[in-house]
Amino acid sequence: MKYVIGIDQSTQGTKALLFDERGSMVKRVDTPHRQIINEQGWVSHDMEEVLQNTLQVAKDVVLGAGIDKADVVAVGISNQRETSVLWDKESGKALNHAIVWQCSRAAEICKRPKIAAAAEMIRERTGIFLSPYFPAAKIAWLLEHTEGAKEKAAAHTICHGTVDSFLVYRLSREHVYRTDYSNASRTQLFDLQDLTWNAKICELFGIDPENMPQVTDSDGDYGTTDLGGFLEHPVPIHAAMGDSHAALFGQGCFESGMTKATYGTGSSVMMNVGEKPVFSPHGVVSSIGWGMQGKVTYVLEGNINYTGAVISWLKDQVQLISSAKETAALAKAANPEDRTYLVPAFTGLGAPYWKDDATAILTGMTRTTGKNEIVKAAVECIAYQIADIVEIMGKDSGLPLAQLRVDGGPTGNEYLMQFQSDLLRIPVSVAPIEELSGMGAAYAAGIGCGLYRKEEIFRTEGRTTYTPKADAKAVEEKKAGWSNAVAQVMGA
Image 1 (cartoon, rainbow, N blue to C red):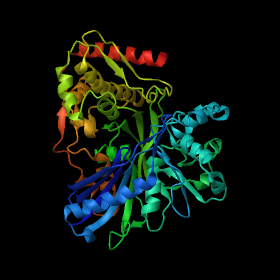
Image 2 (spheres, helix red, strand yellow):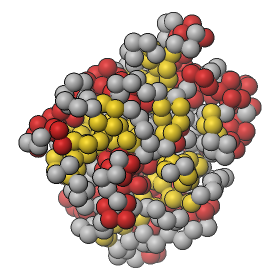
Image 3 (cartoon, one colour):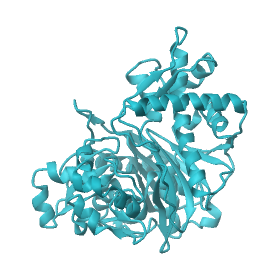
Image 4 (cartoon, one colour):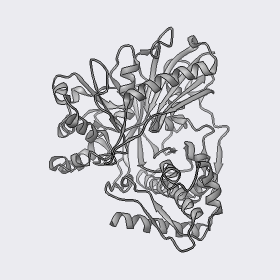
């Protein structure tokens, strides 16, 4: 039996997933890393810690499965996107903590007159609305605020990019400096139509495109790794994909119009739109799903800052729950007539509103609103945000949406999944495993190295499907209440 390791380096931690030659998951190991948050609300990660965790979980998943490590044939990587890293080309050491995608400390850079004036050009070339959410501003901030970075950039002894490129550089024996099309398309520096780093946009942000990684296929060659000396013989790193793109791939969304939502700390809603980009005027962005065999697949995507993180807020800050598993029962027990809404703009609003300075609100409460009703509002706000994006995608693409495929930890919440189906008036199909990002990367690596056949590896059995049950008129009234709540935040 041969095996592929899928490494899913995400916001809260790092997972290693072991898949056998039939594509079945044999073992999972994960470990958290620190969320470094200062008094200004800046969110950072220590990439040296992340790297060591990555090596550890990869070793542990092999040892825990009890397999011969000589039977591992490839590694694939999926990664938290937009999180931006700066490191030294010679030593490979991170020069500063990474700026996490949630962090908006680079907002001032986007407001600079030259950059702000070029916002429409940036959107036309990259498919992305100007925002500190994306790596262009984050990398610019790191270059400006990291000691010695400007000198290293001028001497071309610096590397910068997304988490995948850092991990590939450090894990590969050859110090391969590459990223894939999916991650490149999320930087706000990559031209979606020319498929190159856009020199003019890079210049606006003070970034030398020569210092950016080489862009290659998502199932391409990223060098070889022995996982820090653990493997006796090095194996190819044969895939790198942004986590949401890897989940789309893992969901088998290969046809135009097929759409998935990943429920994690935040959420990504992504629609396959085919071989030509579709540009949306309504707040969702154009990206590349993946590049394989020299051909790219385009997507529409909307990103939400706070979905699963809302449940963490309930547990850690508000202390209304002790475990995420409690939320479904509490939401079901809430008064169904209560019209409390939570708009979780804790660090601004992402798609489709893009209001960086928005703050969160609880609105619509009455004297009878209690714990259950607040938990219900927190759960429902996840579904409302996703529905907003799905509906826009359907209109802007002109593609019919027959089903929403979903993955991620919160999909185990039956109340949330049923409510999502009721809002969208279409079936919601839950993947049989949570780890679609790591699975997608592992499958891409397995296909890339010849272990898997794409036509055979993807299966549909074991999915749980929720169909609409709620009264349509009642749903429209709830959606109107949500829209009013969002309008309060947007007008603040």
